[in-house]
Length: 232
Image (cartoon, rainbow, N blue to C red):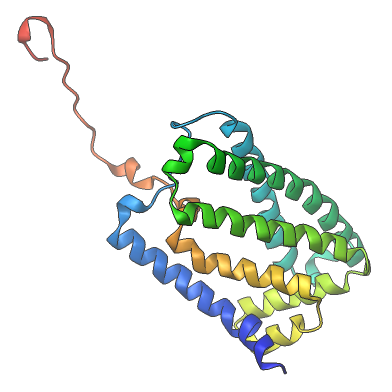
């Protein structure tokens, strides 16, 4: 087996996940005030709502499709749909929601680069992560075009075997499963893993944020100043 293929798709997934988990824990423990989405809507709301909604709706459906498509064993989904029809469904739905995500992302990039107030408050990581997401999205859409050359679902099966073997902690089998697929698919997978590496160091951390601690927080007593100087 090619050692680079083993490193990139057999070992790197676990390295990326370890960096993601340890880095996220360290950031939350040491720098909680930086754990935020860093929304710039208050600086300039022009086009923000449409762009953000398009991007987030698109990316949520794309991620859900990847999760279900890659991790559902063939023995389960064959009760409902064939491999060929599953690939066609993935191409159509992925193209539609990927297109929505692309439009929203391009609008967000344009806003961040051209609006003076938003640009002035943007960190290098804010801009970097947008362009990494753009590259990943474009690669994903390119894989749809590449899939038209093999509508038998063979590549989808190999990618699913890679994902499932990775989850089952079988790096050798995972690397062997993905070895025959084309370069576009491999770049898409590798950059997707790299997003896990970047996750703890960017605003992406807000994806897993939920203010659950508010449920157990004590009530705040707010006193209002009454006329005449008395307090109630």
